[in-house]
Image 1 (cartoon, rainbow, N blue to C red):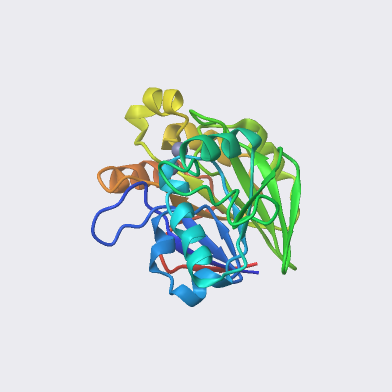
Image 2: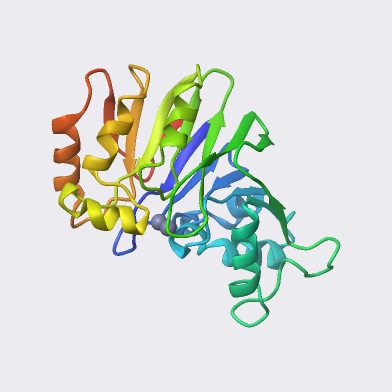
Length: 255
Ligand SMILES: [Zn+2]
Ligand SMILES: [Zn+2]
């Protein structure tokens, strides 16, 4: 499995792109503004979207991606996410007012956007592996995703505060080699982080004790303003044998 990072920022501005990862050319994990850098041909190759939650930095390109499929005769998209997220996207995004209702067009029975509700623990088969919905703890309903390839596995927290069930879950995956975790705030804003359902170094460090050694920890969703401080605070307390990296657009992780 080939995971290419299209965007890993918490917001936009110059070269910053928000969260989206392209898996084997046909599946997106989240649909942030990084998707806008793909060519039309690449957009039309996408048939599956795994969404963590409905916030626009993770879902904002979904209506435009659906539009590309509708305009250029693409195969349409199957979107796997929680029922609460599907309800939010139907009510506020594909409602015929903000954007055409591609979940009913061109035909109610064969629309451009097909929603598939998942709960934590549900697995979605991919072309070269498996994706499983993981628990998360955010300000709105949200999930993480586990991607299991032939040899290795990657866990993505989505937007989440310190969610113990997520860390317990992934600590029992024998093939786990990579974890992508959000780190939105510096440690001094941990109280705000908990309220908003986000992570700070002080909140993340105790969770890392559950990880097996030699895992690669990729940090994402860090505001440009706090990036240096948060990474410094994290590295100061990091357990031995955990390799930490800042996730950047263009990085490829092979599983
Ligand atoms: Zn969010
Ligand atoms: Zn976010």
